[in-house]
Length: 201
Image: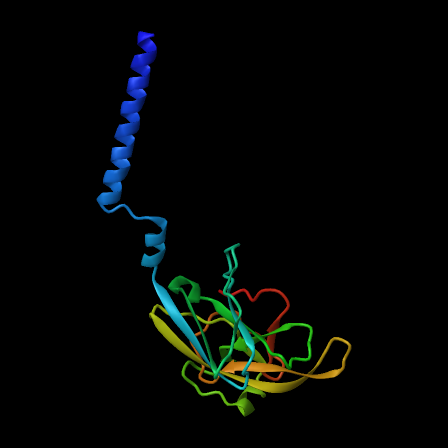
């Protein structure tokens, strides 16, 4: 009986000590998961979109050498703009898919070209120029800034679906060439797309 009482007393004392330690840690600056998330650097990514009102756009980060693929929610272009607030580290190696209500279904998901072959960062890209391009990068190098705005142009382009029927599909590109990441891939008359995930790096 004496042993049982002593053990109970020790357990109660240990529990009280642990509770006090946790409380002290919280009061002395311990960081909760919510606080840790709020302390993570974030960037407001805004797309200023011409030619694709009502289109659904989505951000994807798939980096070579990393198994995990991150995706944003799809958001609809309203009044020529759409934006996300995302962790800054997610901006590096981003690709953007375009789901247009008028897309005829080319057998792939159209993507945004951040840089066409032969163009340098800062170069202006017109619809006429984009149509001549045969290679492109769909990977954005990203930013460390708290806000970034990307000018996106979407053109109704002529293409074909898998059976060979003529359709319209998006030709999407940044109207000013952006800092980009590899790879440079084939583009058909400036049109880029993916059937899976666009890996960057």
